[in-house]
Length: 169
Image (tube, rainbow, N blue to C red):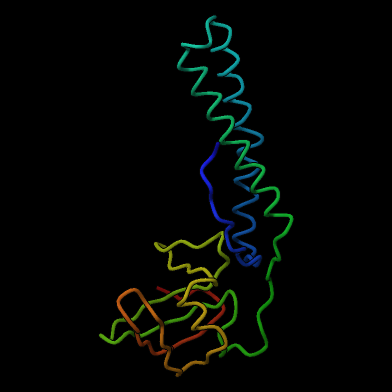
């Protein structure tokens, strides 16, 4: 009997063109390159005889299950995604795909891009549109103050810039 997991709240289905291309590339790699290579390794390990104590065979089968699960997830997820590839008319207002520059309470500038939940990356400054910060930013304008409930209390930010192309470094 498996461990009970409560159903997950469905995440947003929006994605940027770059994010969709990245997921499609991962799906192609897994299906066309990685899975055939692992399948070949498993069949070579199986040819060695006793499979019950064959570590390469056992590990290969585990890898195949993981690859197949990811392929199923990506295939299903990509079918349901809505690609947002146009810029809104009001470019001073925060919508999906916007690059924003925030000034925090200590006068530090932080830059973020609001993206779909399948493409967030903290190192790149990509935040999920489902995150509390992105939810607080959506529909705000340059010059607005933003209040975000964080783990350490309410944080205040000043929205100094909104644009729909990457910031120049």
